[in-house]
Figure 1 (cartoon, rainbow, N blue to C red):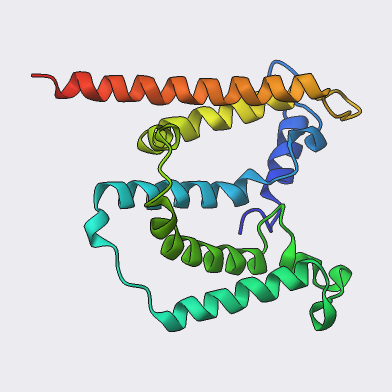
Figure 2: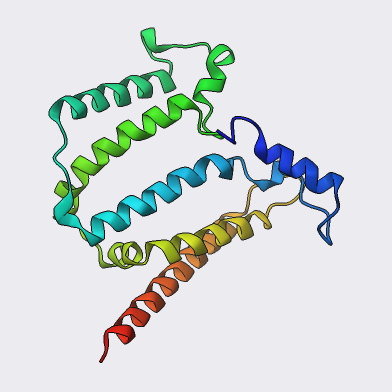
Length: 200
């Protein structure tokens, strides 16, 4: 809700008006397209669901087939709307505030909930055969990895110049490799700390 009300812009204007920082803030356009006040909800919800599933897998509730069917219909309809197919073509100028992805508008929330429901039902069936140890390590340390991922994302914005020119190919590869390396190091450190705490 704070994203729809423009809290990001209001806080930025306040920082510019009241110089509390020893340096001028970046232009708001360089702070990233996604509004953290909207998307942090998804990140926190994802971390909460992941931790809950890892700590109490036996408490998972059975999902109603009717609910799954409804989620599938909603997901397919919104996918067709995204690509303006047939009767699902809409006037984005008129309904843009309802489908804006940067501020996680209401229709985006409905779409996310439908996709999350389908993923939560399908993922155990898929990952029963596909369990990469790297992803398991990242999942077990989801909160520290998530936290360092946020810092790395913000630091990567510093690589953009004033004209927002795209990075060179080798720079993009370097950013990806460095990001995943740091995330894996954090996960390994968390696993080592857990083993040490369990050692008598």
